[in-house]
Length: 65
View 1 (tube, helix red, strand yellow):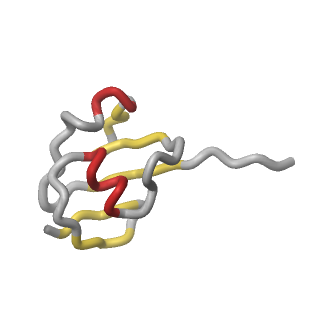
View 2 (view 1 turned 180 degrees about the vertical axis):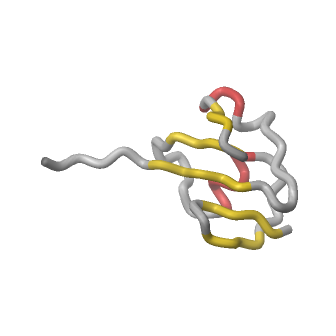
């Protein structure tokens, strides 16, 4: 199914947020996630369904100065 990850169209087969993160190559990385503009805590990713057309935002912390 087609979804958007950080503004880029992607085809995924996973149906929940945790699985989409693994499929997209994030594995167990510490990231913040939002689906259709709604923040999704780590503990709710397994139960967060992903459907065609959803928009995911994945943000990783950065260090620097």
